[in-house]
Length: 295
Image (cartoon, rainbow, N blue to C red; front, side, top):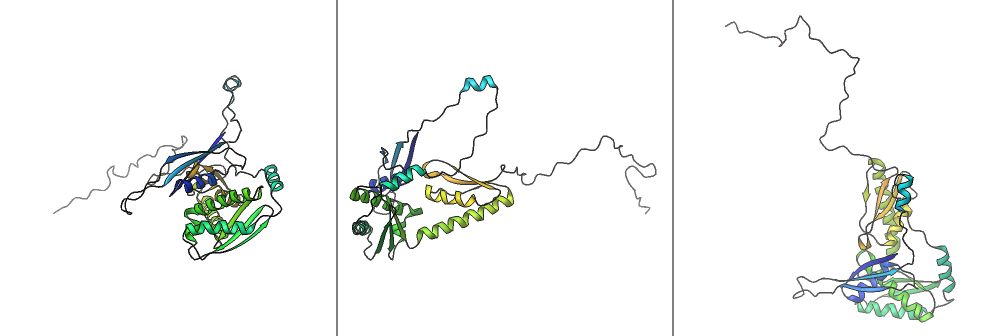
């Protein structure tokens, strides 16, 4: 099955890095890169301009199953409702293989110098970097004044830097190495924010019986929402959309309750058939009391 992701950036290189990071493909995958939109500079540095768009794709080798139409017609079975997408679980076998391929030690000074060169390109020269290595993961703590540039919109720049540094460390150590960069406790704060949002909007779904849709998120953030919702009774989550527009939807278990239109009146029950029709009284005037002015 073909999987693809579209990344954007000020340059083709940056857009490519974002697309590869969002694709989250295995290291052994044959990734194809296609430039969709070339970057355009702003006129006089003020007007117009556009970011570059690059599409990264690869084939995971899994064939999509097609339903047998003939068999369905003969059996006369009803079509099953589409199953809601569950949060993706990590492949334990692939994780164990990647862990076994990880080197026992890596050159942390090389990782620091590589990250320093990237930061210089972002005009950051006062950064303090601490690095450690354990179980195939290089953890780097970064301190600088303007860390918003390093994080970027929704953490896209930070994800791209991590991906590039992972490739550099893999080439340097000849083994599988994953890099995790923490800037201003961004990861921890973002995790807590997403969990709080999941609880808040899940409460809304429980209270109203309606659906709630989050803004588009990357796979890492969607996984946090799915995990948080699994701990809440009466609410389930699923992902919709494609590529950068993929987002999480919260729904009450059993489906969304039908809502009544604003301004509509509830339907009145029909009179019982056994009930006799109301008759007019003979001692009362048909049109009510009529007063006559005697003057």
